[in-house]
Length: 499
Image (cartoon, rainbow, N blue to C red; front, side, top):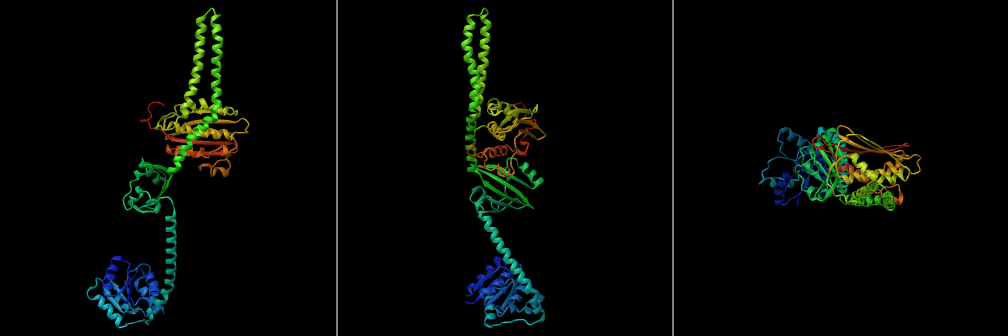
């Protein structure tokens, strides 16, 4: 069975010729470009080569010249099969040693017989034309470089593809017409992503506010660390515009998010335990006063000439003490309640005062002064009350811990706003955050507090801020540390009334 190497980059053209020749007893192999033809001519050792002219990398005439110049392949007859017909091409084919010239479309009834005749005549032809010899010499060095770089490119492409496919997180490439042109194996494991392939992508899948996304892309070319939910799955995504295409990388944080949510509840109850002694102390004062009033006022009432005045005084003191107890208990119950609240309109000033009404004693036990610098007429924000409470408490605890051993320890809580955002600052006058800690302090489970810390304090704060489409910055030096939270300000049409 004669072996034919057909050099053709169009798969449909190849299959037609392969079908005709196979039916007539030939074995046909395909080479997709000039470099592939040179390599397969040496390894496959075909009885004849069918060569197209317009090929990638090396043209057909260049590939034929190099094949005819090599001792191991020079005797293989080469036949041109091309859609390009001209006397110049025929002349050039003859000069580089080709033994036949066929134009497309071929005659399917006679083509196989014509190939058989060429093989039966053993029509071998080299070239000794000076022009062809010089062309061969000039092409040889070029071909070596092209072959080398082609192989290197293929190797790097295989390596790159292996790396991409080995990445455990979804990677999606979107073309300039918003069609998904690539999804890696990790992405194909998710049905909602797999179904996007070769379809136009709708960015509302990732964003509630698509206009905000496009504004960011237009302004800086990327949007990073965007958290979104699809069905019961939670992802964090990075969206980068490269030329006119979009590269989307996603990370499934469903399990991490569930763990953080659970840890947030654990941390909240840990905070309650931490401030419990302070709460008990605050409760003891009004309760002790109540006991004293109950012991004293009956005797005072019986021995008084103005019993109505004594009774009113007794009632007023009882009411004051009971209201203090009720306020403390209500605030503690509110803080410990599991967070399943929707986003509501909030006034951060009121929220801070409410938190401090039952947690400030824990800070003051360490002789920590708490200063409030709250902006009047602070605009409202929209958020989950329990979550923002958690963020503020975490920052207060960190500030308090940073002040251990510090003379005149002080925490300042400030609020202010600008045209688009409302800001909340928690600042301490501690010793600052070391450089090595700054690099890792937002990573889950990183802690400098040993067994006393969970390592989720700041990650939880960051997660809460991101969920509220806000921002988190910090500034630190030897004179202290300031954390700045920002939340989108409600527009005037939304911000009617106070929380």
